Image (cartoon, rainbow, N blue to C red; front, side, top):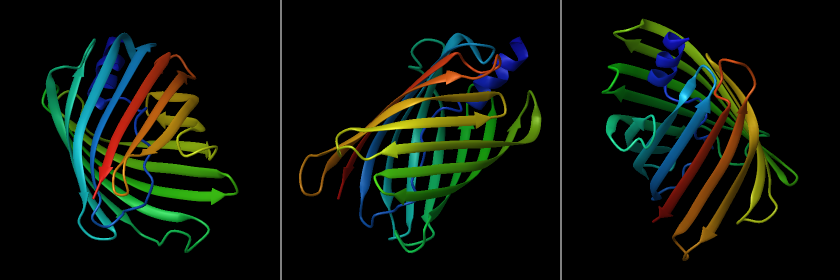
Length: 225
């Protein structure tokens, strides 16, 4: 159990951001994310991970983003690693019944000397007042403790477009040592013609004994041109 717990800490938390495929030319963003897991084999003493990032669209189909990461048992205040991302929009919005994108991530953990390479396929479909988004990932992880290994991940969100400032959603996450489902709220406030603030708040319940009992996640994103 202690080995599984340490591996869960090294891998991060499965409950995190669910990506949409869209890239808007000239858009820039400041993003803050925090996830807190408690209970189960994965996080018996609690785990908190924070990310602070800056990103920009460099073309109308490619966006780049960089994050600094804090990780810990209580407040995740100390610097523990960094992450680099590249996201490609593969199809025009509405061109097909499903909009597609690809995400590549590189993460380096200073605390546990873990490197991760992640490739994710992003799919989004709008139907009536609902938006369905799915991310399927293939993860290559190299660490001194466990060596090199491949893992998979999957996350999905079904969201109802009630109002721009309040959209209820249901989310599901699956990874090597985690299965969880729970509700989320998503919203957007327009600050000016070019600036907006987006936020997400979710609460996930673990579905088996290896998963954290409860995981909370928060995302704040300031977008500007």
